[in-house]
Image (cartoon, rainbow over all chains, first blue to last red; front, side, top):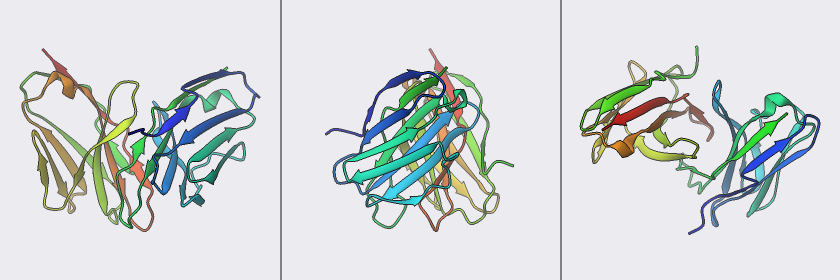
Length: 115
Length: 110
């Protein structure tokens, strides 16, 4: 079975450029989570969706970050304009919500480097 | 104080050793607890949930102490393949947001 798919796997860009990260959750899952991981801060939840609706975006650092989930099988995280401090690994995870906290399945991540 | 704290290690142990990690959490309203495992340059994967009564899965045992607000993970007869970072994860309840520790690094040596 296909797991969570993320693209690109690596991204190197220059400061000020727009970056778009993509995620395809596991088929049948109804929740999707975007995380950022750095050595200093660990894994931080940026935003999560339930049934394609954003539920909690309190972790989104600032207005430069935006996320969308136009349908159940696709989500994007956009950074515009990017800054060097955005360099991190960005993970997408999905789960099947049955009311209780459930297992989150992570994609392989996108390693972003902003020069 | 961080919401979830772990000793970063690294813990270096020989094969066959028993090793234990602790994790403390600050919010007494925390309701669900987990250990995830993350291999180098890979994504986190659920290792086990932690139940109030404690639970065991093969060589792995997880315990929860609500009074002292900590959870533990015990690995018996450690294998080379156990080398990874172990992430302590807490859910406060009321939403599905998980709070992650920075992880404890384990290296099992031959």
